[in-house]
Every structure is written in C-alpha cells, then in structure tokens.
Image (cartoon, rainbow, N blue to C red; front, side, top):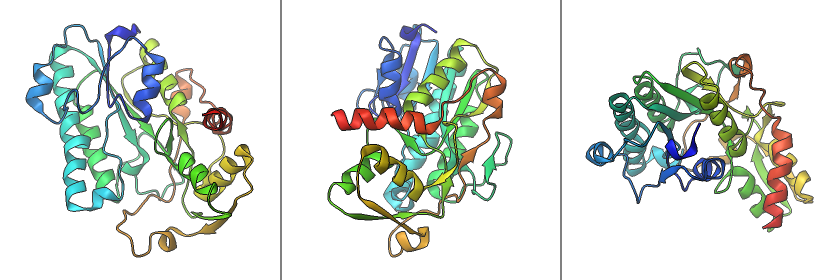
Length: 283
C-alpha cells in the first residue's frame, strides 16, 4: 500500500504516531486540522488522492465518558464521526480501517471471538459499539479490535513507570485480565491487512502471549525496567471506590485465530514490552 494514499485521523494519538512512523508520507490530521465530527468539514475535504482512511481518532477517557460532558464527546467522536468517515468512504470508494476495542464486550467470556455479540458495560463501550456498526455500513471496511493499548503517549505502562519513581509500593487491580496491544504491533497488523488485501470485516488485533491481570502486567513492566517498586494486588471495586468510573470487562483477551488464518502471527506482548521499555528508559 502506497503510504501517500493513506489518510490518518487522530494523527497525534498513540496509534496515530505509530502509523506516521509506518507511513511517513501519509496524509494526516488531528482534531485541530480536521474536525471529523463535523459532517460538512469531512464532506468538503478533497478525497481524490486518498485510497484508505485509517481512523485512529477516539475519545478514550473511559471514566470521563460517565460524566455528562464526557458522554457527549464520546458519542460525537466514537459514533457520529465514524458515520461521517464511513459515508465519505462509500461515496469515494475508499477503504475504511476503524479501530475498535475490547470494551464492546461485557467480559464474561474469557476469550472473545469476532462473532461474539457485543454487550458493552459503560458509555465508552456503547459509543464504540455504535461506531463499529457505522463503520460496517461501508463495503470496504476493516474493524480492528484492540485491547490495553500501549504506545507513545498516556498509557498504563508509562503511568506505572512514573508512579514507581515516587513510590515503593503500588496498588494495582488484579481481577481484570487481558493482553496488551502495542501500537507497533497494531500498525503492523493494519499494514498486513491492507497489503495482503485481506477479506473485509472485523479482526481481533492484539499481541499474542499469556493472559495476565493488570497487577501482573505492572510487575512485568517494573521487572523489565529494573525497578524495585512492589506491586500489591487490589480489586477493581476497591480501586475505584468513591470515584466516577465505568464498569470494565473482567476478561479482555481476544481469540486471534482469524488473524492467524490469513497468515499473520501476532508478536508476543512480552517481546514488544522489552522494546518499549528500552525506548522509554532511553528518553
């Protein structure tokens, strides 16, 4: 896929930055350059030199979405904007790559397949599920589901490393389980789907490897960084007590067999964690 024919939304976010590294000649925009929630602005853009839209834009403040203002923003970015992009994709015969999330599920199943009916628990998940439906309305679409995203920006791994600098002990949730999706891996998966012209549809797209809880993931991060900070297990109920928060899926791991069936073998998250920590410590 020729990078110059790709348009990246959410270009300044974690995935957007990884996609820019993958496609240095790509067309790109963040919210200040193109308001994708504005139907008129999206429709008036010149799409004649574009073949693929990669929608890496999203409202991802899971707990903030439970507030009135956050809920409004979440529906606008995660649902309405996706409809706008799907419409221009249809009208201009473009491929739409839309990034989804494990939060569209209730997390009762330990492993989620692409065919599992969605059942989001909170506002964020509901807005993402609604956006997925709009993305699916355009014929040439890839809905790419990610979980526990880690890249260049605000994320769990960076928060743990920062907290460990000031604390000898960290309390981390131990009753929610999943696998990380490093943006380096997610961008490789997207590139593979486009270059192989894989069948359109929904694909689970995370790193492979063992399923862990957040506390054990934090331990892996600190061990890789050489930190002596200790992680103490806590429950989600205890951690979020007294806070405005969204209910989260207990299990977030994906079945990756569909991705493997088209020839892509996802990288083990522990391998990408090593590379990520090296970069973080070198900055």
